[in-house]
Amino acid sequence: MTLTPGNSGSVPASVPAPAPAPADASAGASTTAGDPTAVAPKPARLVPPVTTREIDLDKDSMLGDRFMIRFSEDTLRLRPLGIRLIVEFIGTFILVTVAAGAGVINHYVGGGPISRTAAVVAPGAVVMAMIYALGPLSGLHINPAVTLAFTARRVFKGAWAVPYIAVQLAAALAAALVLQLMYGHVASGSNYPIAKPGGEWRSLVMEIILTAILVTVILNTATGYRSIGHNAALAVGATVALLGLFASPISGASMNPVRTLGPDIVSWDFTGWWIYIVGPLAGATIAVLLIGLVRGRPGKDDERESAEGGALPV
Image (cartoon, rainbow, N blue to C red; front, side, top):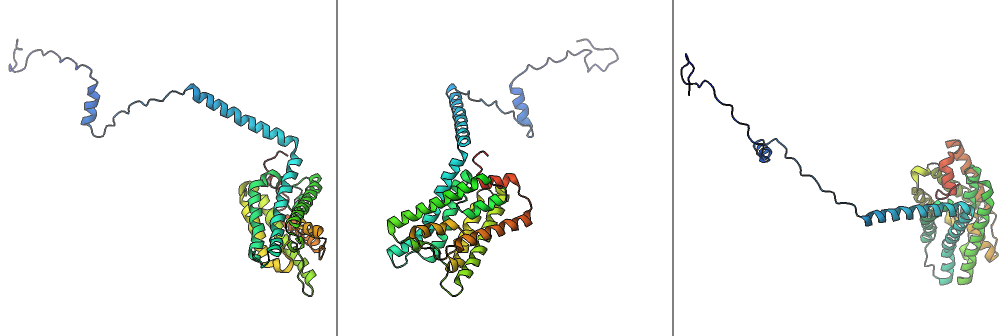
């Protein structure tokens, strides 16, 4: 080793540079281990390949959904009113069977096994259930007072009002006839004014008030149909039941002309029949006027969807 002159002799004149360390895969791991704050790299995740069977199943599902949508649209577009009338008939038939059936069965069995509370709550519960099940198909009026209120509000086609009311009356007659054939004395399932002095006019006023309350609830839930949705069933069904709980001893709490006229016609007993036509129609008129004052002109989209049924094209 050669020393540089004038130096202390302790440092070599030239020192060869150290060779670079070979790249090693373990270097990163040792560095990570030495630094506690370092984050170890995540191993790559293997995504399983999509099989041909899964692709075929997805295609079949999409084709099936598209077929059902097209089938529903075509069917409903061809017969919109007919489908609505069928739903109205079914709904009104069920309502009158339940509402009038309580009195008919009590008379048939004897001893009054069905309490007044049960007799007035049952129609409210069945209305609630039917709105959930059938409401989107026809609007589920099942009541001429409701049909005329929607028509007066101009959110329901006027040309459909008469067929709706005719079907509702036909369904009420059919339900009353079934009860008459099965148990007899269907008159016990109808509604009559209280047998007291002045009972007729008191019953008339009561029917006006009750129907005005019910139709007001229906129209107001219809204005927010898209936000309220099926929760309207709770409001309407509860209203039917609660109004019947306190008012049925006076007028029977009909609030529906065909619910009373059906048993009246089949039994041919027309005691106080006019009360159950004038009262509900007057109450529905009051409700339309009230909502017009409170909410103004109708919101056509929401109210029309509620009145005509959201599941069918208009």
